[in-house]
Image 1: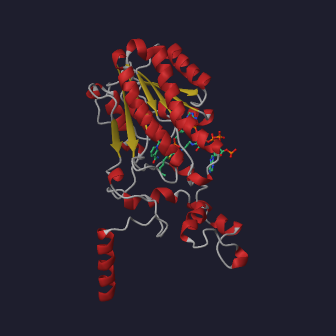
Image 2: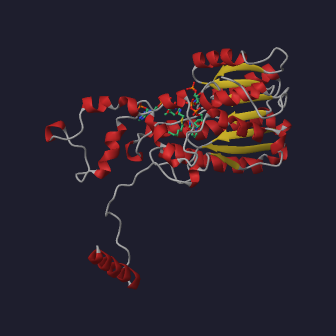
Image 3: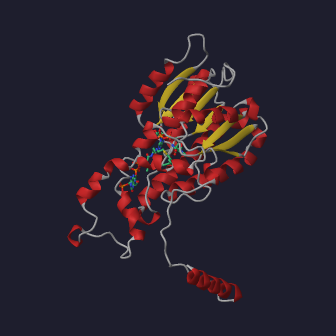
Length: 336
Ligand SMILES: CCC/C=C/C(=O)SCCNC(=O)CCNC(=O)[C@H](O)C(C)(C)COP(=O)([O-])OP(=O)([O-])OC[C@H]1O[C@@H](n2cnc3c(N)ncnc32)[C@H](O)[C@@H]1OP(=O)([O-])[O-]
Ligand SMILES: NC(=O)C1=CN([C@@H]2O[C@H](COP(=O)(O)OP(=O)(O)OC[C@H]3O[C@@H](n4cnc5c(N)ncnc54)[C@H](OP(=O)(O)O)[C@@H]3O)[C@@H](O)[C@H]2O)C=CC1
């Protein structure tokens, strides 16, 4: 990973940041750029081996003259005691916490009707409660008396998040939490903002969806008049072997988004990290409670979610306008 930055080198000298999920994907790019700018970074997530490997790799990027350093601390942000320990360890190690980047998170893809409560709770606990716990602990232990800057990574959930309703709900809640904390903690000199990425490709993000292929079958259900999948003995589609064939299709979810992105390509983690560095930096000294969309306009454009043709909607109230449209349609049909 090449760490480049448009910002002045040394911008974050002597500053200390916690980046959750800082070992992979977007978090790794954020960590690399912060290191490049002289920051002392603590990366935190669940998988110790992956954390250590990333810390080893990223430490190679630090020039001997730099003030930067990287430390890996294992932490499941869903666990209150582990978040408390992450913050306490960072303070023991570095004596201050200037920045918190709540990037750790994620979800699985599933129609809402199929979600189990355990799965719903796992996603809410990770993305909403985990973010809250990290914010609250850095505030209590350091930022309340010393100020600081926080960035929360959310998502493109502006039109809901069909197929990932749990994460849509959690990220919308984090956006609102960001606004509440911006007001409650302003008097401590804390700025807190969110970043809403579009579809961002990384190897780790892609691997998370490897099991998604079989969902292609489930997604077909609304389009089948019988509203269920056919069985092999009925001469139609669903069988275990047919499903196996689609196992590799999960990662296609990223490629499927391309037509819906005005840039006509996916985004990359190194296109999110500069926005994070900007919001942490003095250049954003008058910005708080805001959300920056980094999505090439994706949230203003098209949706990957297809609504099949149907006639299930309640009829409109009868009246002169409905009558006029009906007449018009009759005439047009006649012409055709
Ligand atoms: C595509 C473009 C947009 C991309 C956006 C991105 O964010 S990219 C970034 C992408 N990166 C990431 O998202 C990385 C982080 N993400 C994760 O770690 C997981 O997605 C997590 C948040 C669900 C936590 O999972 P965990 O294993 O630690 O949690 P746990 O063991 O406590 O409970 C799990 C329960 O959740 C359920 N469930 C889980 N998976 C599925 C599934 N495939 N199918 C159905 N259900 C599933 C299931 O109920 C399960 O319990 P059960 O029924 O088995 O007893
Ligand atoms: N890629 C995309 O298109 C988009 C991504 N996002 C969000 O951006 C963030 C980074 O995603 P991305 O880099 O793409 O994907 P990754 O899967 O690479 O990153 C997710 C990171 O979160 C960490 N994490 C997950 N659960 C926890 C937990 N309970 N405690 C601590 N850390 C945790 C993971 O580490 P570990 O498993 O070791 O705990 C991993 O490092 C996520 O919040 C994601 O949802 C938002 C919009 C779009």
